Length: 55
Ligand SMILES: [Zn+2]
Image 1: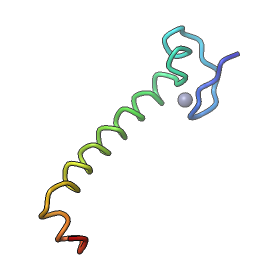
Image 2: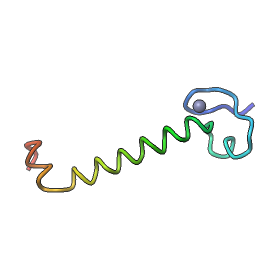
Image 3: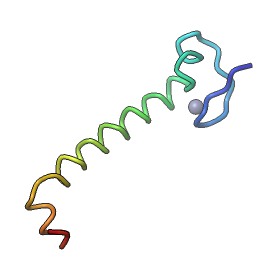
C-alpha cells in the first residue's frame, strides 16, 4: 500500500500515489514551496541582505 511521504497515511487515488503525497499534504507542500521562493526573492535583494547584516 503506497503511503503519503509527509503524514504516512495510505494513498488511494492514482494521482496522489504518483506524487507520493495525499491531496492535503500536497497543498501544504505547494504552499511552503511558494513561501520559500518568496523568501528567496527577498534574500536576493541587496536591501534585505543589508537589513540582515549579511552584506
Ligand atoms: Zn499526507
